[in-house]
Image (cartoon, rainbow, N blue to C red):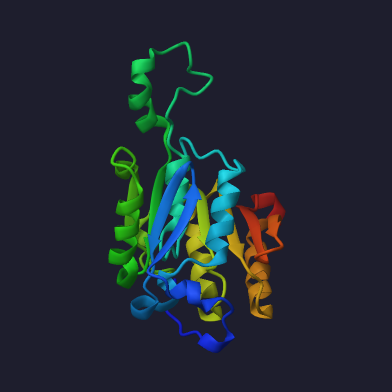
Length: 244
């Protein structure tokens, strides 16, 4: 997340960003996200990339149960909230069904459910946490952590390769942050981790970041929403032999 000013006259549909609540339906639940443009600017509103990435997760493109996931630059937290809801296990998985009594279902949900860490800079954490707590039921909240992460700065509070899935929505737009963002992605990823980045390619510098990313990751476009003009890119660390 970067707190940068936007020229209001150049933003189409800006009115929806000034609404105090944005309502969505994901994972068979109504999600109400607080917005606060006046206090936190671009960090406190829901951008189209977050909606598209949440939709992509709901399509089942990634198995979230049992997954350790992190959202970078979460802002309002929509993507992380959706990931946590989709990662819950309300019933026994097929491979376990028949081996366990149905009364163990709730316990197993805490074993195989997703563990989601939702991050942003310190200034946005209180706001972010309020959205997370308002939209996650009590039995899921223990599997979700809201945590400070300033790209490239406090990485020692995260174990190298800690996460299976790294999520980012509209975090590629400020060129000054590209080196720190790349460093953060490298630190958080193991050789088996997957990165999903949703973004609108607004400027040539956005493509420049993808070029930087390709030096250390295998990158492919896996989804495009033509109505919202949002791309989703998947990235995984290059194997050592690919770098030679």
